[in-house]
Image (cartoon, rainbow, N blue to C red; front, side):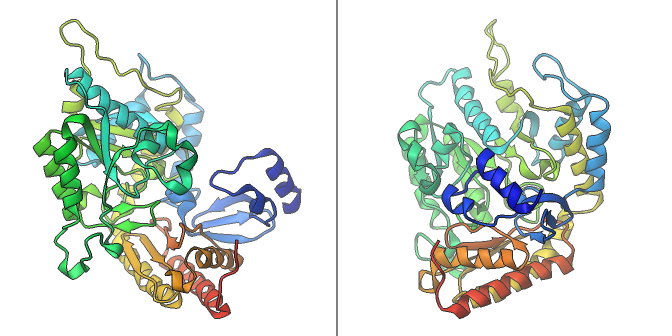
Length: 448
């Protein structure tokens, strides 16, 4: 089959997510048949550098041999068994290992297959926690403007993104939204050198006024990824932990995207030295090899679901393949790689290379604001330089140059595998810089 043949079959048979159908069908989109390390290989022979780790999850590169071997070995022994009323060794070991690497106190793991479901579980845990404690009326959540937590209906409620979720507005219960602590566009007009985290006042006011009707505060620690890689300071998270303690709210930290080293710490919460009551993890949990996520909770939360006075307080929530032995084996192998190859320790020097290169990209794009954290680097193209249209044009040109990216509105970003060799990081940046230069030289981005 040629690439054109496969493209024709794809547009007939596959509904591609987050993809506008009409323009996609008219495009010569890549059809990837294999991958290795930081590279995707298309059926037409093109090699594409994976600049966004295939939606932020392939932290350890494609086809890491230790993960592949773990999958192969487990598949020959036990493919699946339910976790309702029984257990299995891989799930047990993975729960223990996650408790060991997570912020202290998060000792109980509820497994799922993707981030949205992990967040959905976290929300339901928070709601039932208060019911189990005999506290009525705690049915709302507080979240951040611009936050994104997945695409199931509960997750949409706490992470409503108008461009994604507008058709479902009337079907969800929206969270109370505090101002986004967006350092590049400070909501209170401060510069980084004068920041006193004054933006926290919005969160503080909401919690003070509404805490009696709220179950939890839900945030993405330090980086609101889908909002355009909005970075904010650890002090905000420290204040939020203290605020939740003061008013008796649970703190839910959504580390689906940031967990397992992306920010330069195993979890972004560690930069602030805080432990949330509930932590969601996914994406990099298996190194991106297989779909798996988990919702971790503290003893205090877990114990609220024990039977009391002869009354069961069971959490009636789960998924068919939660804790699947093969995905658990992949996750255990990934955790070994993170540890043995000192992946997290390698993020700061790689991050410096990425930041230096992306500063050059920013200059090519009208001195666009640059934001970086660990191995995340993003530039937001000003409207005067073309904004979202320019970002789309840059990404299209980058694809022609062998770099696969996806824009976030006017934001162009790199999110490479954490173990990307320095030479590959520099090549990714060089291709993006050339794409930016080529588009800037035309004077205007084409529509589309």
